[in-house]
Amino acid sequence: MAERQQWYRRWGAVVVAAGVVAGVGLGSSGCSGNGAAAQGVSAEESVAVVQRAAEELVEARSSKARTSMEMATGGTRVTIRGEGVYDFRRQTGQLKVLLPQDPAGASTQRPITELLAPGALFMKNRGAGVPADKWVRVETRSLSDGNLVTGGATDPFAAAEVLRGARSATYVGETEVAGTPVRHYRGTADLGAAAEGASAGNKEALAAAAKGFATARVPFDVYLDGQGRIRKVRHRFSFVNGQQPGSVAVASTTLLYDFGAPVDVRLPDDEDIYAGKIAEG
Image (tube, helix red, strand yellow):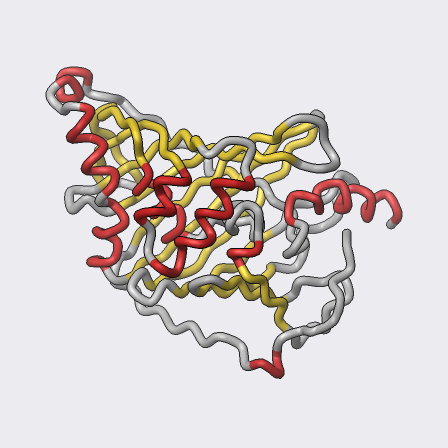
């Protein structure tokens, strides 16, 4: 038990406020880029298309989502996966987040239920002394990563709004994501610029991330369908972990599908939110 707690405490610094281990990765799907087609799309056109991706999701109203976050440091790799639904107009969603097994091979931890809302993250089954019937509420603007990493899953709309800060983009070519034809773009976004163009619900959180990460530059790969909607987006963040020397690289991937899916998210009442101190580890 002591060894297990030590392992989780090591990674707990990644998510100081929420206490959720961070790090995800959906396997990247291969892209058979069409070089001839790619040559016909200018960098300016590519940047403009990528920057509009968040608006196209608002037009789509909602979708189902799968998330993955992957972090490797000191010879240890941590992967967290999530699945749920998201309403892009209300900027609310619900995810079931699965923490990884510990090094001793213990069974997968109970899923953490996460409710996403503008400016806030709610978690249930948080553990570490939190009653089973209570939610933990975290103000995302108070997090140094703007909840791009803390919850173990990047908020799907925040992931899209990072692309508003695209400063360079290249059209790689055509491929498929889960059987859907898509256009693959690769580039770099600036979190400060993304915050300036973001919606009210994400503006402060992205501004905090721009200051809190090791660098405000975020390399990305995004796959857009024929309507300009994100089918898959992968970001690579770099942040400073107080318990590890230097910066830590995190790859966060979000898959969106089944657009228009019903979303019914009810945020917790005040009496259902845990007001006590959250234990570390």
